Length: 110
Image 1 (cartoon, rainbow, N blue to C red):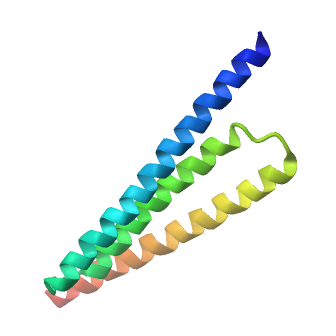
Image 2 (image 1 turned 180 degrees about the horizontal axis):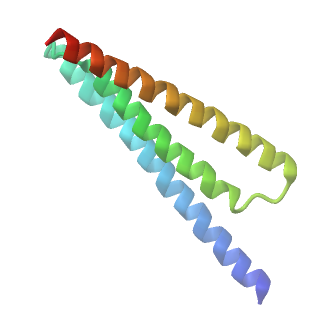
């Protein structure tokens, strides 16, 4: 009985992982296409929009890694996931910092 519940839970988490990672990919592709169109139109603040899209995609990736922790069985896998979460978090902080400094720069120009 417990094994069946554990198996169902594992399948649910794996399905959720696929969904969250698909959203991450969709956000990145949508952002890139949108920024290419803006680049062709020579719109301002393209790098700001690209940074915001990447930051959003990283948040989804981070959520997927947190879900992945729920089904990890070995300590070595947990260490790898912890490293991925740490790096994703650092990248998110750096991108948010860059986006906020870009916003400040844009407001100073106005």
